[in-house]
Amino acid sequence: MLEAAREAIGFIEGITYQDFLASALVRRGVERNLEVIEEAALRVSNTFREAHPEIPWREIIGQRNILAHDYDNVVPERVWKVASGDLAQLAATLEALIPDTDLGDQ
Image (cartoon, rainbow, N blue to C red; front, side, top):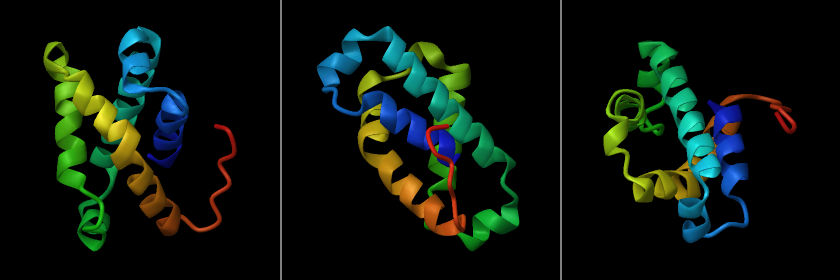
């Protein structure tokens, strides 16, 4: 989850929403990383999820269903909002839960 969040954040670093809309490559890259985050969230145990309510598990998993199964209804503005705002908080929260993370540029 953390690696995918970092990668998605990196894809949009230094670009505007208009740049995001203009680049199918960037949009698809961000969407794919969101799918990875969401799929990984599904694999986290219920015990861990319950122990960490600061992570919006339900919202993360719900977004996955839209990206994976209802892709014709993906709203680019929502994807941008998640990538440009929500992912930084998620990454910070995950970093605090994973001691000594050194994932580098992965």
